[in-house]
Length: 279
Ligand SMILES: [Zn+2]
Image 1 (tube, rainbow, N blue to C red):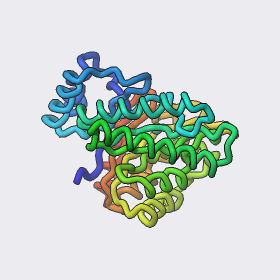
Image 2 (tube, rainbow, N blue to C red; image 1 turned 90 degrees about the horizontal axis):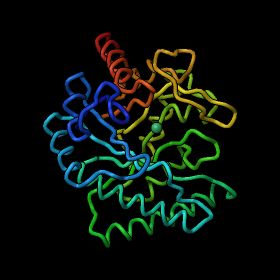
Image 3 (cartoon, rainbow, N blue to C red; image 1 turned 45 degrees about the vertical axis):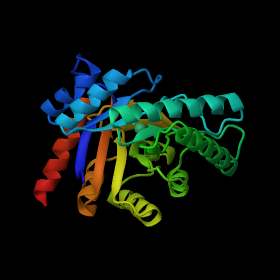
Image 4 (cartoon, protein in one colour; image 1 turned 120 degrees about the vertical axis):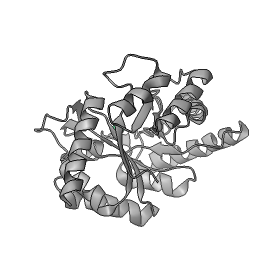
């Protein structure tokens, strides 16, 4: 049980020390989650990864890991799918060392395929991935495919739920800003958030959620750019989300992906505590 936690996506901006000791800083400033980012390749050495794990446990900071961006499990090119699977295998191995409870990744793009065809290709790749992991003896992992922000990307809420329904060791990452951008501003109030939570609960039977939050700018194609929390002219709205989390009583790990990730995670936490105290 981890209740509700907040932390940055990647190294805190105010911290210049070693990655393996980042959780000292995160705990010190009042946060309790950290998404380690391997977004440009899994480069961490086993030794540092094990230190990061030990340090996060000492500080009671919940660690997740973001796998490389360059993953496309539904590509029409076999070598791209192969390399994507390889990156996920590398991620799973590193995640085991780090003790990351989730491995976040973006599943892929539709390219020339219909959503159904892309889902089929993605599932085929996941089957190969699972075979490779088991043959390498990697067992302790939870992949967390993320809802994606562009309409060209595989990763609507329904698709992410479907992937997690079918595969063991899979749980969703809900990026609320991506859902907002993808639906062209479709999240306006607490009812909109409530529908998302109900869907997850009804279809996956979960009351635990790994999620991302940022303010986001979008075009008619979806996600364009992340913005800071104080730029309130960009959505999605934060307070209705925090209210929904509190009223549902879920365990939620919220990773802040704004340009000010650690500072803004603290602002989100302040808002959360304010709402909690009003109840
Ligand atoms: Zn995200």
